[in-house]
Amino acid sequence: MSATIRTAAVVSVMGLSGLMLVSCTGDDGLAEAVSELRESAENHEFAGDALAEFPLTVTAAEPVEKDGTATVELSFDWDIDGNEWAYRVPVTLTETDEGWNVEETPELSGLGLKEGETIEVARSYPERADIVGAGGKTIVTEREVASYGLDKSWVEPDQVSDSAARIAEALGIDADEFAARAEQMGEQAFVEAITLRPDDAQSRVPDDFFDIPGANAVEKTMMLAPTRAFARDVLGTVGEATAEIIEESDGTVAAGDIVGLSGLQKAKDAELRGTPSIAINAVSGEQSRELVSFEGAKAEPLATTLDVELHNRADRVLSGVDGTASIVAIRPSTGGVLAVANSESSDVFANATSGQYAPGSTFKVVTALALLRAGASPDDVVTCADTLTVDGYEFHNFPEYPDAKTGEISLRDAIANSCNTAMVAQADRIDDAALQDAAASLGLVGTSDIGAFMGSVPHSTSATEHAADLIGQGRILVSPFAMATVAASVAAGATVAPHVLETAEASAEASEAPEDSADGSADPAATSAPAEGAAPLTAEEASTLGELMRAVVTDGSGSELKGLEPAVSAKTGTAEFDDDGELATHGWMIATQGDLAVAVFVADGTGSDTAAPIVKELLAAEPAA
Figure (cartoon, rainbow, N blue to C red):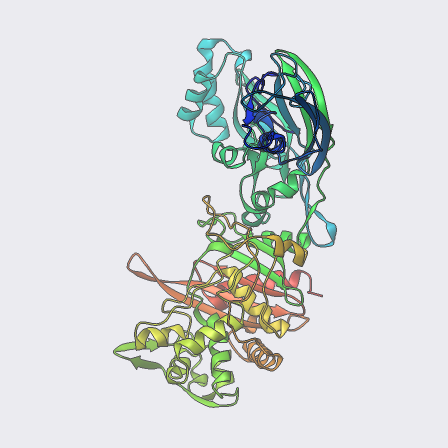
């Protein structure tokens, strides 16, 4: 539970005594005086600054005039965060030679304030709502943790530095920083070093930790996903509000409040925090009187499309991978995002959604679509040469390319075995616009409701670059999330706009896609939509692309998946890049199985030898429905 308190300066009950409203000109000016009085009230001049955040409507009844005075009833109607607070205040005006002024009255504001009292607005938030996945399975909820650190009340002042250094060493944190922080805090303070889940504590905290003087652990709960790695770049984190968040909240967030700091937790913070209880109090010193209050309500769990079992499986598969690797899974029939997983040893935070890499030969699915639209068919004969030179640059196939699939082969075989030179030779049939349109039709360069990088397919700057674009090199960039969208579009038979929020309404309520958030995680305050102007992917086109991807498994570079049931269609990719002067490769594979589409990326590897075994392990663990 959290609270936000805002206190106004003292509201004088005589604040408008003797206020001259209008002068008499022609008639007695009472109507104008009443109108000015109403406007002054509506501009919060009677109630003080504490209530300035709340809209107020004031209406005035017909004034009753008698013997140089007039009485008018003002109706105050406040909107207190959607709650109505209404009351009436009789106001007496006196006619003078100069016009009308307001009689002195303690009830002028209608708040019943006494001399010296201030208005205080207090908000008390309910427990934060959970985040749930497909089928309503709980993902983020209150989970037990323990904060390990130094309890300064347990040690003498001259022991603080030594104990802090020993605690830091035991927990594997910066000893100098922790010791300095411990010295600065109060004599009775608990100085937190690290907060751990019970499972993490077993491997992180040594058995003799509590033998260190002052070492302590404080048990508490935090809003957490099932594991530390579970979809963290999508779900985000919660914690105490930062100064920036407080400043931007217009008074709805105060120091100490628990708020979303990144991901869905940040983008949907207002929904997850629920409706606060609000009390408007009259305060004088330590005395407080409640003027009015409104009950809040806990929010409903935020529903996402994430599949808990599949995501856990993806995390387990990636646990055996060294370096940066990602798995993204999407339900083609709905566009629902099922898993967004990254390896624990990833060098790139939020790599699954924010990583930007050349797609290599997985992009040949896009090139194939452009060729189909240019009149090609899978049975067309193309030439797969060992090398092909474009404007002085020599293109080649990957080292293990089968000799039996060189020379005159079908377009189907060229894609199945990933012949680079055969695709490069088609450069004259596909211009930049055609390639960009094909990419957009397969879901690239659109937007997603988690702000993921959906790819970049820029205009080429030379014939060589255009040729390289056709095989997913050049300046083409994608994320694992974007390539999973390509696979999902093929399986769905239409362009897929992936979304992580369970309902279309939830996505529609989000704002336009922002840049990545400051902490590097995807900011899910975007809508899911294909790129504007993209030609729709037709069912016939998707069916042909599906056949080409199936041939990759049955007759080509994806044979690792041949024995899986239900049948799998796929496309491998090995993207070359310069690593400090050395040629290195990223490994890719996109695949579909039933109503499941996945993309696997490995920073150091190849499509067939590195990415394909990961896909196989993921899909073989439990066949897709």
